[in-house]
Length: 201
Image (cartoon, rainbow, N blue to C red):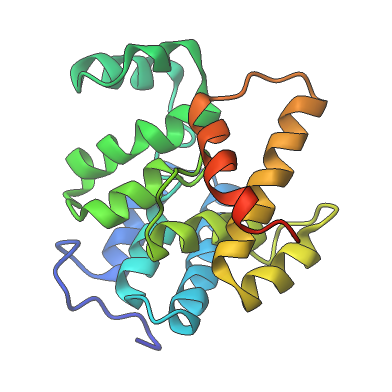
């Protein structure tokens, strides 16, 4: 998969056709970001014996809905009968949890592992498959990211994917608390499930 040719029929088209569909919904900076996340996800998939085509598709689509207007998300929450508690949050949560539904219905991607990777890439989850962990971390450590701790996150993730998940979750929760931001309940569940397992990160 060096040129990332799609053969598994997860998406009914080529990688370039998927890119073209995604590009219609993202501004150039965000479009460049999802391609870097894809590259990082594929490398992590290689290192962790995970399906590289799924990593490519999940990496590219994780922010598919990121730049939609709020009205689109609110309509989708109601249309797809998602948890009404979501209405109390905003794009930071919606673009993953609700975005997965838009990926399914607009792009025809029904693979649950990919959809869960999209759903959980900002909040994490108590249980995350290796693919979910990969997308969660690839979004955090892709080469364009530059924040205190990112180099450490890259090193930890290269050594142990699960430890990377714990590091990011701890880092994210600390950031939300420090900035007096609302914490989505699933983020706390993720913290409780992952951080105590890796006390040294």
